[in-house]
Every structure is written in structure tokens, then in C-alpha cells.
Amino acid sequence: MAQVVLDKIDKIYPNGFQAVTELSLEIEDGEFLVLVGPSGCGKSTALRMIAGLEEISGGEMRIGDRIVNDVEPKDRDIAMVFQNYALYPHMSVYDNIGFALKLAKVPKEEADVRIREAARILELEDNLDRKPGQLSGGQRQRVAMGRAIVRKPSAFLMDEPLSNLDAKLRVQMRAEIARLQRELGVTTFYVTHDQVEAMTMGDRVAVIKDGVLQQVDTPQKLYDRPNNVFVAAFIGSPSMNLFEGIFSLNSEGASVALGSQTLQIPAPVIEARPGLRRFDGKSLIFGVRPEDMNDAALVESGLVTTNITAEVALIEALGADILVHFPLDTPVVDSGDPDAVQDLSENTMVVGRFDPRSRPRPGDTVDVAINAARMNFFDSESRLAIWE
Image (cartoon, rainbow, N blue to C red; front, side, top):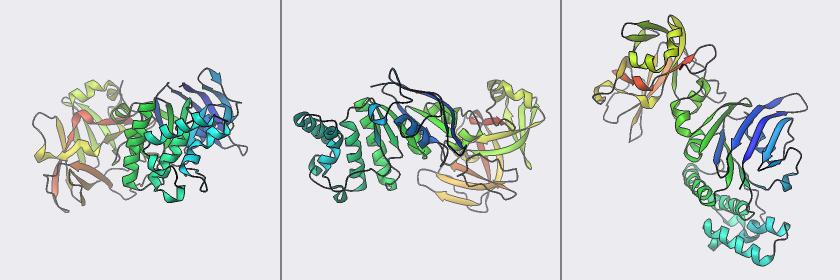
């Protein structure tokens, strides 16, 4: 196993386009680190530079104790799992898994032991004589994993390996890959555009936008304390609701004017975020996650909340909870995610995740309770979270 270190890595193409800018990451020995971001943000480029498939324009890349900037891919002691599996259709599962061992001239007896052990771990023992075309998508992905496992590399690199699978199989394979990585303890760098995949699999998650690292932390800390508006909106599903409003201090704490409504902010929230005092009388970005909103009639006693009134526009019943959509006459905040759908009407459409006992219907007026302890605030200019 080995630590993988990216120290201020740049990637500039011959046409002058900079795909990655001073990317610094430390993937610890045995860690599962996920790099996530929207399409075209530079995440696959970063992975390919680790693999040696893309030339590094600047900075230093280390695998273990070696600087590998100019080391050939075959000499980096890494194994890749690709999005399209990259299996040889004319070879059996056994031969596909063992192909790298054959190239490395590993003795047949040792290769056989390693191939069959990988097949056992991946539950492919009954498929060793089959060709890839006779397998399901999930089985083919396991074969690709097996080909990486048998090499016993210092690190795994995985480039969106589940994107070709259907939704149910993706969930299953997420759990299998996470279990396998823990069992093998191999340092793993995993690239995806799916933030749910990132949050459920990674020991740590790194969020990247336009080739620039935005934040790296544990999944829970990314969710609880996003560094900026982009991370706040990108992490979580449905996305965080973001509004622009005027912030004002008062004797009870503060308030935020959101269009025609005023949201009261209790004093403990200001005490936890003393930096908010600098914004008295100024515009800021207020954020609240759908799961921190509920029908005020069903809020548990003792929970400190503040309410707004809204007219229900749409209901999505999910069984365990319901998604309630309602408009607020407050400006739209662009999350910075080019893949995000922006509501460009004069009203901002808000989503709340309500208790299923709530029974609102489209057209009903409801009191929406917001968990005061879970509010988020960002500087309108820098778009950074406001804390100190």
C-alpha cells in the first residue's frame, strides 16, 4: 500500500486551456478518497495524471516515497478500473482477470491462485469460463475489479466505474466496492460526478469545480459545514435552498428579509457565527437544506425553529417523507454548478422535505418551520461561508 500525494498539480493543454489548477491532495495509505464535481471540472484529468496517462504541467506527484512525474504508467504500481470496463471480448473471465499477470510473466501456479482468490472475493467463481458478452453489467464490472485486484497494486484508480449501470445495480455495486476496499485496505482514488455516490463511499470527499479544489473533508463535515455556496449546493439531494436577503441585527438576534417575508434568527445562531455581525444592514446568501424544513404543525417540541408562510405548488410523495415545492418572491442564487437547473422566474422555487403525516395539497397555504440550528449563511461577494 502507499500514500498518493498531489502537490500543487497543474494541467495546461497546448491550446492554453488550464484543466487543473494547483491541485493539492494527500490520499493516505489505505484511504478511500472520492473526487467529485460536475462534468468537465477536471476530475478525470486529475486521475489520468496520477495514472501517467496525462502529462503533468506543473507541481509534484508522489506515490509512496517516489516522485512519479516522469515515470511511465506501467512502472507506477497502480491499477485502473475504467467506466467502460475495457474487457477483452474474446477472452474468458479467467483470462481477463489474469491478463496483467501474464504480461508480467508471473508463474502460472501463482497466477492461478491469485485469479481464483480474486474470483472468490468477487463471487465470480461460477463464471470463470464465460466470455464478457455472457455476463451482466454488474458481473463485467466485477471482472474489471478482479483484474485490478490480482496485481496487488499500491493504489486503485477508479474513473466513474458505475456510470454505465442501472440505478438499482449502482446502489448494490457502491456497497460492494466500499466493502472490497475496506477488506483489501488498498489506497483508492475514485472519480465520480454523482455526489450521492461520493458521500456514501468515501472516507473523505474532495469537491472540485473548474479545475480548482473547493473543499476536502469527511462526508458529514462537507454536509454540515460547506466552505462555500458551490459545495453547499452540490452536496445533498435535493440541493440546498439558497436565497439572497438583507440581514439585520435586532434585540432578539437578527432577521433576514426574503422578498416579502422576514425570517427571524435566534440569538444562539449569531453567537455560533459571530462573523454575521459584520453584515448588519447588508445583503447575504441564506441557505437551508430541504430536510431542515417541515410542516410547522408537526415540529417536535423543544426544537428551535423560525417560520415562513408559503403556498404549496407541487407535492412529491416518497413514502418515508414528502417533498413540498413552494415559491418565495426572493432573488435566485446561482450555485455555480453548470449542470444545475436554475429557476429563472421572478420567484425562487423552494423544496422542503416534510414529515409524511403532513397533508398539504397544491394551493394550500402552510406554515413552514426551519430548524434554526441548521441555517447556513454565505458572503454574497466571496460566496464563502460566514463563521468567525
